[in-house]
Length: 331
Image (cartoon, rainbow, N blue to C red):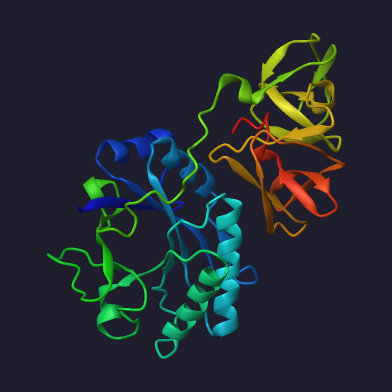
């Protein structure tokens, strides 16, 4: 049975309501651009990807991800796969996820691009992500630039009655302007239309981002200035963000009004609350994935530091829990 899959990137919205429009229209899967290039190349990570994944899951859509491929040679192609894989794991996407190489960049060398793609795919497969797929234009497959049988194909061909390719075709991107929304839409013949993430999205409960004061304290603004506002002990507050104030974590509980974490029931600890999945990633000092931890687990932390653009709790010598995956983050 033919189903539908929408392709989104940072050009598209990331709200739950936006993805609800697709779900209501009968679209089963969101294929989300995650990365481009390698850590020492473009090093591009879609800044909307976490929210887009969360929004798709909130609407009970399947989630797949793709990497815009620019590899040139074996080592470079494997470096791109490594970068892609780190972000896949950082998003909490497990090994059943369909992961796609988007191969269309004009800089790619036709005489060895397929060998480079093979290096990229084999890295993903050998590191536990076997559900790989290859995306490109019909013309690249028909010209023999890319092999039509090695991997499941997702073919782009607009304004035609068929995808125009014979081979291991399992999805056809038939328009780049679905319903006048300037978004790509595909027919899916079995590539994406299966659950790719067995964990169910966490249904956010009212208490999951609520912190409780342990004492009567002043509030602060984000630059560390103490405010006249005071909150009483044993009062509950919904926290919507965690930042560092004077080097220590603080919760946003009002308009530019923060309470220091040390004054709450979360003093000295970080409680895992993954906003979309039942697990959350730990990372190292370089920002690379280390391992998963489960929702509800509690960790003592020694430092609160910034890695890349994320505030993180240091929970062991070289393991850091991003604050966005903890109670109080508002996520």
